Structures are given as C-alpha cells and as structure tokens.
Image (cartoon, rainbow over all chains, first blue to last red; front, side, top):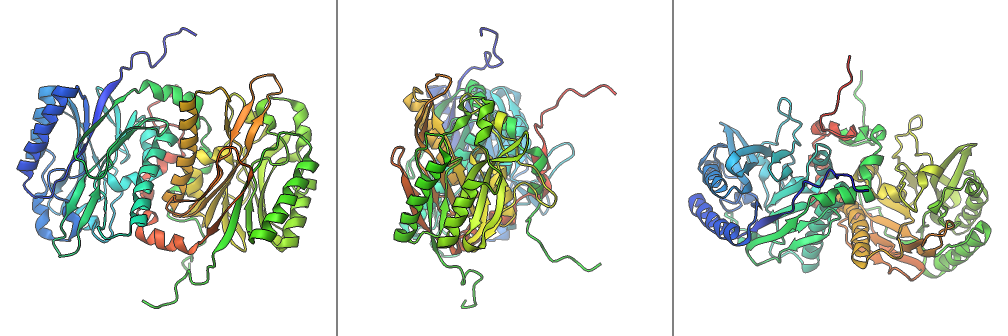
Length: 316
Length: 316
C-alpha cells in the first residue's frame, strides 16, 4: 500500500514543558527570568512548542481568599502576554502561557493563551472546571469558562504545529474534557498545572496522589490516542494565613498516544523537559485501537446529567 | 464531628478476580474445574465477591469468524449459569460470570450475569462496545448491548455487597462507560476481560499495550473515586486459521478508589487474586477530590456526537 498517507506531511517537532518554582509576586521579574530561560532553551535545543505552568507569573495565590490578590490579574493584552508574544514572534515559537485574567470588573478567569510565533495570538482557553478545597480556594477568584457564541467551552486552538487541546489543572481530572477536545479535532492535549501536597501529608498518601495525577492524564492520551503535555510548578510556597503551605510536586511530563512517557521530571529539579512529538503516530495508534469507531453515542445522553440515581421530585 | 456517617454501616469484604488459561471448548469441564477452584477459594479465604474472566467457559473463539461457534452460546438460564447459580447459592457468594448469550435465533450477545448468592440472579449486562480487529472478530458474534425499556445500557446491578458497575473488556477503554456507571450509583467497577498480545509483537509494543490497559482502568477508579476489579485470561490460544494465535496477558488486578493497586497478578501465573474492598473509602476519597461537584454538565452535550469537526452537509 504505497498511497500517499494523510500523515505524510506531518513533521515531528520538539516540545518542552516548564517546571519552575515561582514563590514571589513580582510578575515582571518572574516573566523576565522565564523568558531568559526560554531563550536559552530555544537557541540550544530547537524547541518549537513550549507549555508554561499554570499562573507562572506569580506564587500560587489561591491558598487564601484575599480580595487584594485580584490586583495580580491582567487583561488578555496585558504586559505579561505582551512579553511572551514578543518573545514568541522573535523566535517563531508556539507558546502556551497561563494567566490570571481580568475580563471585566468583578469577572476574572484562569486563562491560557496560545501564541503561534510570528502569527500572534491563536486563541484562548478559560479553565472550565474550577476546584475549591483547603489551600486551593479557586472558586473565589476564577469564574468558570463559559460557552461563548459559536464556542463550546472545549475548543481546540489551531497553530502551525497542530490543533492544541488546551486545558488547565483541575480540568485534567475530567475525562469528559479530554474527550471533547479530541472530538473537536485536537492533535494533542496540553495542561498547565499547579498541584502539590500539604507538606506533612503521609508519604503513602502523597504517593497515591501523585500516581493518580500521572495515571489519569496518561489515560487521556490512551483513551484519545494523542500526546499529552503537562507542566507543573515545584517547590514550597508559604501560606499567608500561617498554615503549612503547599509543596508543589513537579513531575511535569510528556506522554505519547499510548500513554507512554516521553519525558518525565522529578519532584524537585526545575527546568524545561523536552521530547519529540510525532503526530503521525496518532494515525497508527488509532488504527490499531479504534476507540472512536465504537463509541456508543446512542447511550451517552446521561453524561450531561449531574447524577442518575432517583431523586425527590417536586410536587406539581 | 461525631455524627453517624453514611458510611458507618459499610463493612469491608474480600473480593477475588479469576485468571485462568481456558484453551479448550469443553464448557462442562471448564466450568467444573473453575467451580472446584472457587470452592477451595471460598472455603479457605472467605471471599464474598468473585469476578470471573470474560467467556470463561471456553477458549476465546473470536480469533476466527466461524458460524459453527454460535453453538457455544447458551440462553441466560443455560447450564453454565445454572452451575454457577447453584454454587453461589450454596456458599452465598456474589459471582460475576460471563457468557456467550443466545437471546434469539441470529441474536447473540457477550453478556455478564451477576448472581447474588442465595438471592439468585441480580441482573445482567450486555457488552456495549464491541471490538473488531485482527484476532478479535467480535462484531461477527456479538450484537452490542441495547437500551431496553427503562434501562440505559449502562445500568449497575444491586447485590448485598453493593451496586456493581459491570462492564466487559472493550468497554474498559471508554471513560464514558465508567462515568455512566458511577453516575448511576455504582459502588465499584467490574471488568471481565480477554486481552492479549500477538506472540511475536515487539517487546516495547507489548509493554506499551499492557501499561495502557492497566493505566486506563486505574484512571476509571481515579476519575470516579471507586474500586475497580479486572479479571483477565492468560496463556496462549492457537489460531484455528493457522496464524500465530493470541497470548493472553493475565495481569488481573484490583485497584482502590485512588487507582492504587490492591492486588496485581503477573502475566503467567493462574489463580484467583484477592483484596479487601472497603467501600467506606469512596466517601473519604470523594470528599478530598470532589470531581462530581464540578462536572460541567452544561458543556458536555458534544459527548453524544460521533465527531465535532465540520462535516459535509447534504444538499437541501
């Protein structure tokens, strides 16, 4: 069978995921430091796609509900975006950045922006699933991403390297989010993340949490037959309220379309972790394990419900 | 906080997953052997829930499309069911069995039946997602499970030990199936399975396939905060058409609600593998990682579609 394959025109490229400690609140300094490291990375390794970690311009401020922290937010065209857009244009790099977005007074989001090198902004994704648990008070800060006219909420973003299914942190626990991105044609999934342990958590519980986090994201690669890139922060950040703070667990990774690890960082070593992404492998993997062929779309309506057990009906 | 918890009445129980070689076609002999092993298991270990592997009464006959193999099918009340029902009643054991079901002339299913000890049949599940790839010609034999009146297709089955979300083999690759069972109140997920490698497959490809299979099912436990039990066959079975046959990869396992392994079999050792299931842990895990709270049911409608990329419209 020597016909021209639909994947013949796909060229592998090098991608990197960021893993840095960012314990402070000086956005300008953190952005300058990251861009300095990015410049070295791009010049030395030829990386074409870079995924930055969640809220990379500052410490993870959601350990406390503090209205003053809304001052950290920027509009989509704010100075942090401008700095990365300038870098991306200079080196024609595709960059997935993450920011605290001020959309309107009293309306803030946790937003990823995709910059397609010289072509500028390719699109944005506003975190859809917002967590809220002790130390991660995100529902105070972030309005969940909405379904804008013509956009489903889970909308991949086209770049010169492929169609990016960008999701953010808590979204990573939802197979629905990964599937919707894949159905909408995503070539790969990208997760900027900020997740860690309570420092005094028991070692076996720490191990289970980390393994669960890696496992479920590798499973998104497997279920959908596409690569997954995950960038997580690392290091301890103090709790402004005097608690024990959070120890971000690093372990950024890149997995291929069978969930196999292509790059994998340890818990405590900062850096950019790189792998070569070959999107032509998706075609091969999906031919062998054709999950999309057999989905029972006639039987999935319940997925749009909160719960399927009998409930108390209202009186009519 | 000393209130009575909703989980206070839940008692842990011991569960087992079967892993046997069944290369022949003598259903009576295979069933007698399995029941003999089950008797020993129940008497010695006090196991209360047993998950048998997929199509455990015979060799995996789907390596070839052969109309004669329909003779292996039985109605739901056939002799294989009767044998397990008698055993289950005698020892008051909950058994998940798997069979080739003859529902009507020309209408056959791959069906799991749940026997709740002395209380008899608790319910059935007909495999919803049917594979078809070289060596696994299941679409020839098995009609996909249907949505019967009042039943969604993904309906858990109540037993004295809990509400079982029974799914079969290829279903295990679909996060949708696991989620629908969880939303319908399943306390645990159960997968009778028959999966293996082509014997001459490259070692690295074998490793990726096995890891993917474990990873995605552990991810169902994680995404839904419940235990997962997987029973797989092992050993080589010849290809009647003269090919190299299939080497079933064993590795049956039981995982807890964080995806942690509670029991894990190797590739080549037959037996029943056991673990203690504590369903009270589900409440604790789901409080810590409350995924059900934050599902974006307003944005999941696309999951009922085959594909979400623009298609060619018909002319009106």
